Length: 342
Ligand code: DGY
Image 1 (tube, rainbow, N blue to C red):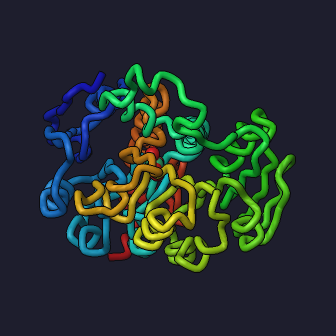
Image 2 (image 1 turned 135 degrees about the vertical axis):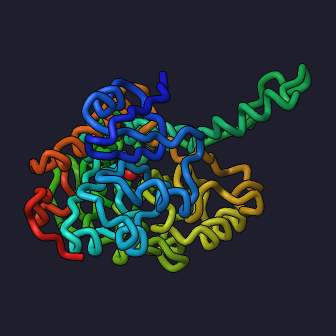
């Protein structure tokens, strides 16, 4: 599915892409630009990223690439940064804006796919699916334990109360899935938005009143650590926490402690404070946790749509057109004649 592409055309705008992408987007870029795609999985280190982007007119990056003030200062040719992600906590947006660089991202195309994974984690956690799989594979399912009335008992998802922290596109997609399972849905959002079928409540009441809490917020200075030890302590001991948003929103050490002490029933976690998850993480030792490696948007169709949109953002930026999805729309695409704020 993934193609390795580069094109040599020094007279064209230079584009540095930090990973091979699925779909045909890179072919479109190669036809119009001098394209350099980082060839190895895992992407460039920070130093390699700076080196790769130093002479580039456009940078197409991933959420694992740190695009900070130092990089933006070193890469003075950049006319557009496009991230193949909706989240932009890896990009210094204020600095890009100050420098007049539009930053593209990929909202709108991954909400349903991410909600699918959040709901899968909810089901897997409540019904102990990963634990049951480990039980079968490790030879625990023996003739002596063919079917036991109390083997691997979980909790019902249907009819339970779901609390959505965040009611953006992904939170609303999760609420629609919950409605299909006959769940009552509580919701809290910073924007205090009203959503049909969702009872808007204070965050404290959502935490205390939900059988499962699911997080759908961007990571910002305001949301970092929002689910700290105090917030987690408000949750019912039989409740589950699902996080497909960003790890930094939850105090991971406090979560592991609460899970180990039985102050929370379980968690389904796709995103972590530091990725990849360190082998020393206490979460790895807990049976009541389902862990996935940041795959919320990882369906074939959605990753192709994200790649296409990221490429469209690059092409628009290079052509001095408005980006299809710009996170700092106050910045107009730089034209060749416009003076730059450096
Ligand atoms: C994003 O795009 O920010 C998601 O985390 C990718 O799954």
